[in-house]
Length: 144
Image (cartoon, rainbow, N blue to C red; front, top):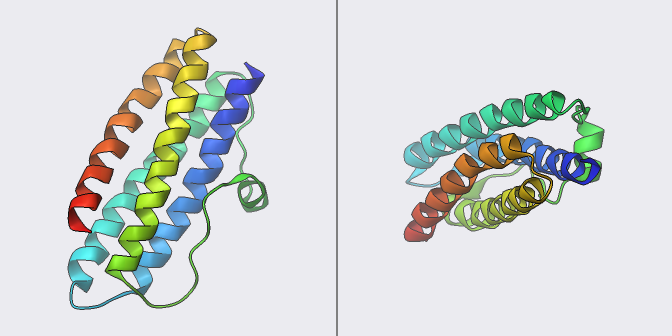
């Protein structure tokens, strides 16, 4: 179970940093497609925020402690932060495709570990994320 909890906390860290990154892009997007991209980024960060809560609470149901500090997240994440600067949608999309791919691979690893440990609640939880990230990636790649 230690391996699974470690992977879940890694995922939680990635989600927390990605949430802030999406919000940063939401504030700093520029270009003629501003309104569309601004709204889409808000949709994404709201989805990620819900996932942060679900994952943290799930870790608690496993009688483990979710990471909860920004320092912990930054020390653990594999997602790069966004800079505080104006950025065009093409660059945003390119960056978040990479991040959604990272999240997709992470939840697949968690699923494999959960199945190995017969922790079917965790396995079931990440099924939805696998579907969500796959669809988001398909849609983002259509816009690049």
